[in-house]
Image 1 (tube, rainbow, N blue to C red):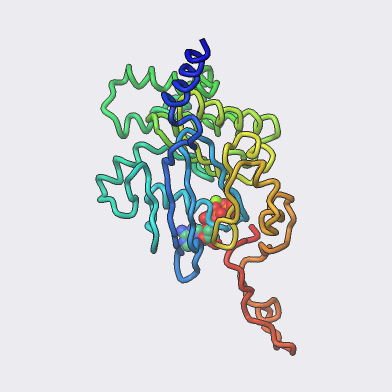
Image 2 (image 1 turned 180 degrees about the vertical axis):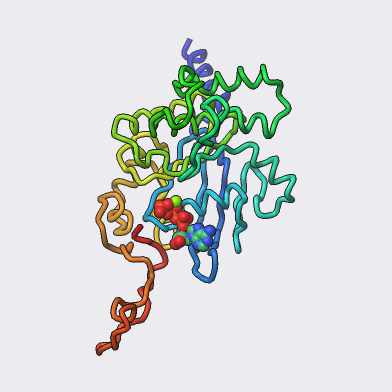
Length: 304
Ligand SMILES: Nc1ncnc2c1ncn2[C@@H]1O[C@H](COP(=O)(O)OP(=O)(O)OP(=O)(O)O)[C@@H](O)[C@H]1O
Ligand SMILES: [Mg+2]
């Protein structure tokens, strides 16, 4: 009896070898360096995005969060290092290869608006009509399914001007998942939403992630909601990753940069000001002793 129990017990662990292993990464970023011009924005980023999880990327404004999403989507190429999506090194793909990898990604842009002259239905149908060869009747089924998933099937015939900001965000989300992506990247999905819509949007992102088996990356400044729905939080500062862990681990971090971030302190190791000449120099006043450095030297933190 005892033996039978033991072998059952062992069988359970041996037959489920992934029981204790973390989920495999969908994206691995190694030693990534990138700047739009001479100013380096990302200076040696290492991070991994596990499959099936919700990962939040947080950090000061201007720190390079949107830039990381653009590098994952292949809109820009790293100056050095690599961004690997499910085994594909994004920077080394040919254009057709990149296009086919991109079809596996959905993106909710930071300032992404709906097409104002298209109805809610047609907004969600847009990528299906552009990219697939589906018949109109199949497109209708898919669009209604996606709108249902975000709770807006009943709003299908409305125009963007007739819906609220929170609803528009949900329509954009339905559009981002129209092509059944494996990865959805949300850039500031909560910006400008009232607390109720914000909570709804956050829970929706979590629910869609789990129900459809997505992998989600959220870039957000909203600490509370984001920490509630994320499995993993990555904090960027001064061109690097200063924390990567569960929301609890990040909350408890003693690192001054992370502490400034999670306590929302306006100034600290991350500067409020975008790099600039001194105020006196900008006003054309003579520089008086003691001579100040002509540039504040922080690499990130736009103070937007
Ligand atoms: N297309 C571009 N050309 C030149 N510089 C850019 C471009 N896009 C962004 N930058 C600069 O790169 C830096 C990082 O920008 P990014 O948009 O990635 O920041 P962010 O972390 O997303 O900020 P926010 O939280 O304000 O959205 C900023 O200093 C910005 O001015
Ligand atoms: Mg951004």
